[in-house]
Length: 95
Image (tube, rainbow, N blue to C red; front, side, top):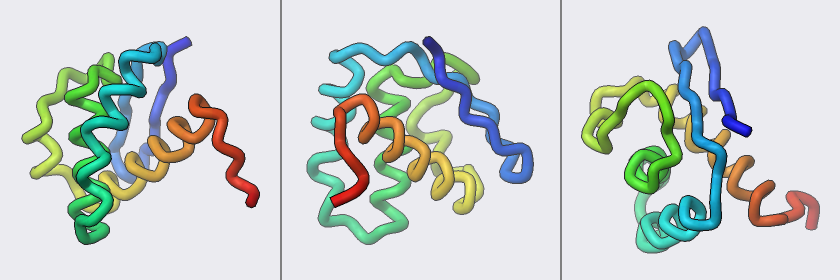
């Protein structure tokens, strides 16, 4: 099932593909080196990684498009992606 990321206040309207193992593997590979980055760069790296890994069905996006997004939209998307990734990987948010 496709996932909708919609936040009207931040003007985000994104449809994600139905995730497959290849999507989460490529995403994990792309973000593994980003963990040492400052938080702002890490969040941008997360959004670029979902684009590169083929998570975004619409609108058509390229990784460089993230450069012109509003920072609060990047924050929101990256947090949503963290939740989705945790869910598909079976990570319990409670310790």
